Image 1 (cartoon, rainbow, N blue to C red):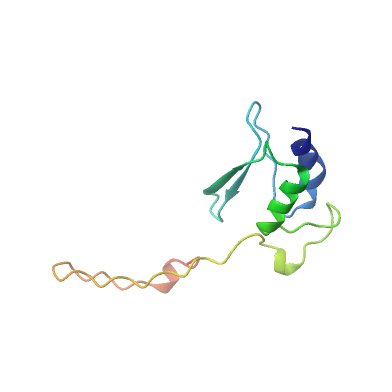
Image 2: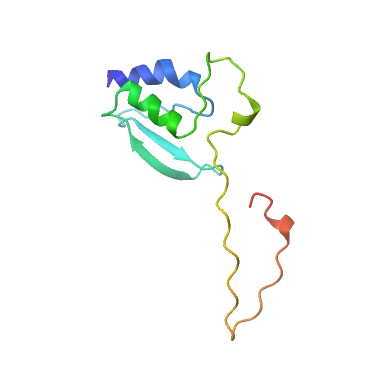
Length: 111
């Protein structure tokens, strides 16, 4: 996979919030994690060209710096994080169930 190797060695250092974890013997794949480091998706990279991988990573919202040490603009500091999905309003309790306790908005500041 010379294309993937070139991406790993030459391109990954330019992306903010993109890390390389070497797993001996494993096929190369992009593993997307949420802000709690829970796995969201795995994308195999073996059959992709270096250009295709760069396009994919940028489409996913990763910020590409000019040089590895270049500063990251404030608006991209948490990139490629997307806003949390809008929560659905709680369903009304069933007639035979107890009323749930009131929620403290400070209980889950990340929601």
